[in-house]
Length: 329
Image (cartoon, rainbow, N blue to C red; front, side, top):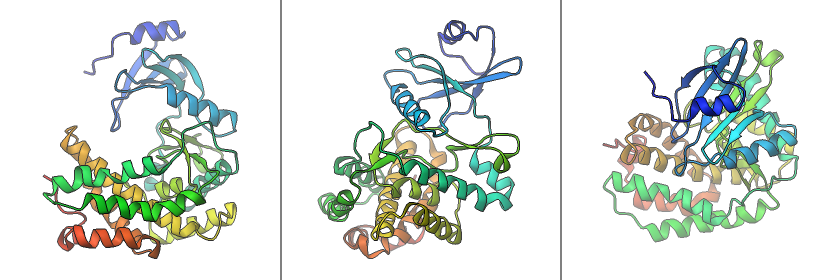
């Protein structure tokens, strides 16, 4: 039986949902917890983001901006942000990942709709958010050498790693000005298929965007098309990349920047999934690392990543790379 957080009934009562049925929803890789609230035919989604580990304010800020700019974020129904409570519209259970896997004929249309949403988002001035700057890029890429390489017993050249990334990222950062709103976790488990008829008359809803920044338009495209949690065929990736380029006309260096951010994001994810196992006791994410590693290897083949690729060649043994990053104990 799931233990309910203290104060949940009081918050629901104050929000006009007193006496409603509370159903726990399986959580993600964070400290946040989710509950579906039911009364008669109505439902709502309750997020509990307990301080000091979590803060629901960034989610609220980004949601308000997305809603004001005609993007499909969940509507905000009630909140007690100091205590970590946020009640929102319920987008249901139909995540893009499971929808596509149970209806493979819908895959191209579903992805096309997700690409078109990015084109729409990137046509708007960026939200009032912090910049995706060199400090953030480097901190994220550094998760690989902070967590993965020690877990594998590797002694690597950390200074040269940072220098290689700086060389690769510096021109990209100049090209990302003025920047777009980057949701940062735009993938098949964070896009919801809304409505009973799905793609025919439903929308796609956005969730898990509380870490949004102002950055490069290729980042969310990489998140979607180089998905850590499901295989996206090279043919579909290519078709959707071309669809985005046709819709957004992003400039001549876009595919180079796509590869750079693919490698940066995938290096980050290898580090995060290792940390989830070593620090947080969540080993289930280790199973995704071979897919992420293979995606990163593909990105490293782009000439724009030559300094970073050279670092990998010098610091990560071939046998580990050949087997998807090796086995983490």
